[in-house]
Image 1 (tube, rainbow, N blue to C red):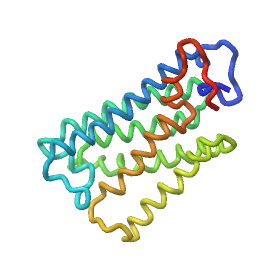
Image 2: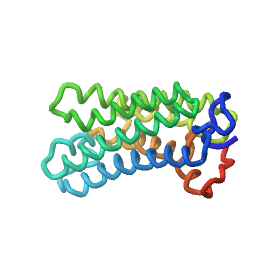
Image 3: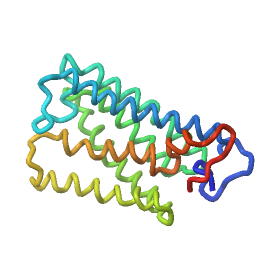
Length: 213
């Protein structure tokens, strides 16, 4: 089965099964993750006052030095992520595609509506909740595959991250460190363990379908 084959409804020779379609989908995933994580990293570099223990990542979105990099990184990443999700949908994964698209809209909303806006909180909560659902649904569907089991494990791990933080088990007062694992797990899902991994598309020779799943 190719990495971009549909879930039980693959049509031989159809466009969504083509290697080129898979590479385009993966390219959007790569842009989404690099844009979002790059915006965060650049924002941290541009804000010498940022504290990993006392601040939330969203504090970067309201400070003069880091706001443009942080907010536009999330907005651009969200837009590319919706396109990646659309690729999953066209490849026959509609539920995962819908959940991921909603998560990407929420991620873009975190950048579009900064901490001073009432929609910022719902967008942030929606993003983290929806990516947990993506991990759970995708992992369950692909639970017979090693990468599927890793994706499935991400869901309880992410829940545990937030549960332990809420319970006061983290020696920090800010949200930045608890926010980071979810973002990194999403990037790992897109690049390595998801149903359309970027690394597999990169390794696949032009015109030659991969055999990653």
